Amino acid sequence: MKLSSLTAGTGGLAVLLLALGTWTPADAGAPVPPAPVSTEAVTFQVDSGHSSVLFNVKHMEVSHFYGRFNRVEGEIVYDEAKPESSSVKIEIPANSIDTNSEKRDQHLLSPDFLDAKQFPRLKFTSTKVERDGALWKVTGDLAFHGTQQEVTFDMEVTGEGEARGGGKLMGFLATFEIDRTEWGMEYSVGPISKEIEITVSLEAKSS
Amino acid sequence: MDPTTLLLEGVLAPAVLAGLLLALGWRAWRREAPGDARRREAPGDARRREAPGVDGRWIGGPALAFGFGLTFYFLSGWPASPLPDSPRTPTGLDWLAWLCLPVGLLLALEGRLGRRRHLLRGLVAVVALRLVLTNAFANIWEPGEGWLWLAGLTILLLLQWAALARATRRPGASGPLLLWILATGLAVLAGLTGSARIGQLSGGLAAGLGAALVLAWWRPRLALEGSGAGLVIVLLFGLGLNAYFFSYTEGLDVALLAAAPFAALVAELPPLKRLAPSKRTAAQAVCALLPIAVALMRAGMAFVAAQEEAGDYY
Image 1 (cartoon, rainbow over the protein chains, first blue to last red):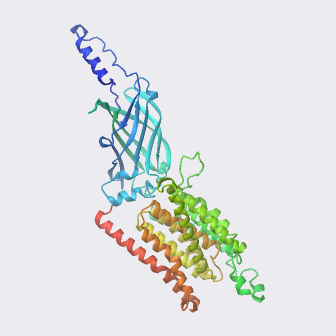
Image 2 (spheres, rainbow over the protein chains, first blue to last red; image 1 turned 180 degrees about the vertical axis):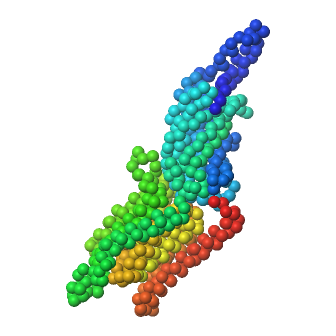
Image 3 (cartoon, helix red, strand yellow; image 1 turned 45 degrees about the vertical axis):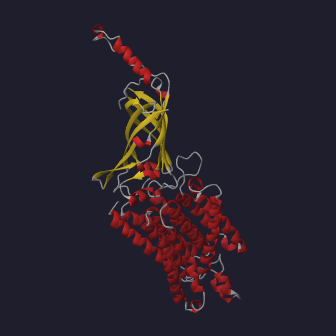
């Protein structure tokens, strides 16, 4: 995952203008100075309306079927200068599942799959964040179906910008695969693959 | 799990295990239980022969508990540990798996407790329901609401227990047949209403009861009265609560199933009470089947309608 350099809001814009104003042809070919780095951790709240959580299973070993969760909540603490101080906390209400079939959604919420009445939220809490070049490597505990397991995935910063009404926007994207049986979700393995590919695309806004 | 494996592990294995243990406990190879010949001569013989605790009746609970535990293990592996540092939180079904053997063993003592058995039943009912409903207390009910549910459900369970104890008190096939009907009814209902796992576990319990039924038919002196009936009612009640509170089985269907043990008592009233044993067994089965059949018809029609509307969504 690529991580673009983070410039801090209007401060970043000022740095950019300053750089443009002082640019001379003599600078052409000169080494590009490293982008300015925010020295403070910034806390972002996930905007559910512009975020997506998709899951992909293989059906009857034939086709890929995609479903989604329509709500996602959470907080991302982003510290570019000290990546290890960053953190990711995501929660998804299980009953926001949407597979374009009410009956199937109901079955997916039953004890055969998510067991949503007993475990109403899917949760991810990071325990370690590292920077690996352009990618951020996030390790943490993924909990659903009453079971918590450690997962590691790469996360990409897909963009950044100004939010309407103030604050800063950042986009994040991660795709990773889990084996659902490790979370005790053993039902119908075979017709429905035990491997689930999860794609999380988040838009988050700083306050 | 393919159907053959499901049949072998979810039905055949628990039936064989429960059947073997029952046969050993009941000493089914003997035509008469030890001591029967002596007791036949003694005054008050009939009452004593039907008293709980004689003729190996204690084995019913433990045998069916082993069968149910085996079904659970084959379907879901070991249940989640309830210890605080466990990475898994026990579900209502996990709690039933943990509870089945201790409850089966505790109830094996019932025959020796006399009237104090009611105290034991009350204790078992409260503890079992509180544990099975742990996640409902945490995620569904408001504080205080859960305790009201627990109180009401405990009373209902104890009433069902009393009804089943009465309906299954005679030796022979009538008791196992009634319990088998209840377990099979719940298995089909849960399967139709979108919780295959609850259906499969009920099916495993029904398989153990099927073995008991065959043995009791072969040796009519055998009975599940006491620990066997007690364990079955606790497990069925717990599975029914899982279906209603944690899955999507409709309340009316669960209530119809819960009414079946009371319906079976109709066979204890005149004129059915005076029928020959085989006819009374049939009457008892029919009485219990009536509310179950209504529930299954309702669930079946809803299932077909959903299939027609949504297609094959699996």
